[in-house]
Length: 208
Image (cartoon, rainbow, N blue to C red; front, side, top):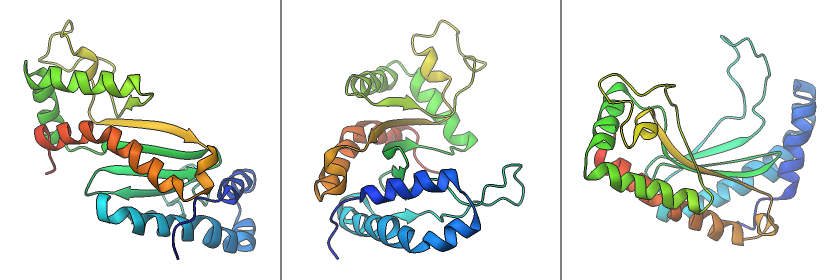
């Protein structure tokens, strides 16, 4: 079935799940999840696949074995396009989009810092970051509270040096196009806007 949009019923489902995160609610409304969340997102993943690669569709169940939080179900549904480092999820607030590097290894963190410190490629990243911020994207990722040891606190890119991972994201919410086929186009457009960040990371950090 062709992708027709992300139904607003998906947002309503997660709003209700936030209020009643119980096995009884999940069992009674599992068909809503299957029809209004899972099916549309799998259809979207299939149509985005040729340009963004295959998607990992995350399980809706939380692993509570070693967690103090015993909430059973995730209150959003995420998909990760690993080949292009793109991510999205749908939850009660609507659509969230992101791209970049998460969960970096110590070796990747080292390469990231050296590249940021570099007098040529560091300023290139700075320009990418400023451009994304001007377009309304938030720059995020795991960060230290201080500039890492070995680097000057007065470094011109001190804030970037604090990053252990680096991402761009946008809380899209629930625009009128979300429940229409145009959603695919708008998502792809946002990811293309974030592509320069991913390209910089691929070139100067890379995967282990």
